Image (cartoon, rainbow, N blue to C red; front, top):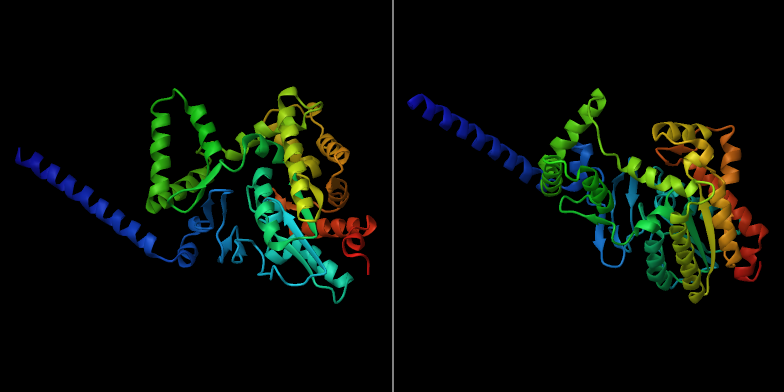
Length: 396
């Protein structure tokens, strides 16, 4: 009996000691400044970048100076990845760039984004003119959120031209899901996709204790930085060993998104297409209220540009390539918007042309700097040939 008591006591002491150590680690992690914390543990690199917002769902924090996806992220006082601009200052041309992670410039430095490259090109061509291209892009945004950004930042900056970066790769699906209510920043400082969480719950429905353990895991990751760190390290290790199976958010979204590229467009997806058109029409109306023109820039996905990327996805998801048309969706949306009097620039042809001799325009699904440069040059060329620059400012 005494031996059993000693065993229980020793076990209790071990548990208490482990709990104390974890508590000390948790307190330490929460006390370490974010900049230093991300330098020590890369797992926390994207923490505390966003904040919840009642009108937008979430947004970038203002006055940031941190590292995001391996690149410097600096935001101004309005939470935009751009410099401070005097909203009431006199300009010869002011452009507002709307969009998601492509416009934001995920994977590149701020000065390498197509918005900033376009600004430099315009300043070089119109020496002495005060020209501003303001980048309002935010990763993960849907068109409904971008419309709200236009309402907010448009009134503040009063642009002459709105460049709306429309990502053909998933904006239709994003609009179908709805962006404003979709993602939220949780207590650990990370942004979570509640739609994906719901899809995972659907897959686990009725699979007890799987669903129970999933909810416990989700709760602990949101509440405890220590648990988040340990879980992240274990998952990375198991992934390297090839013995871990994850519910990939990208796989879930890709499988729901690919039907938009079917030829013809399935009936059940026409609602999402029409919703997209209606939001873009609202963006046009809002731009006109500001006295600004709007140009929609169609940004293609990597699998639209590179045949090899498409083949890999078709094989991975067991889809028949014959059922899909990678150009058709661009033609469809460009034609529909054109019939509504909305100007469209389709970057797919130019990027495909460049891709024939360069297989490095995309990295991890986003543009590299040279692709941003191509986009900026195409937008500038269009602005010149269509007379947008001279029409907006009454010529030179």
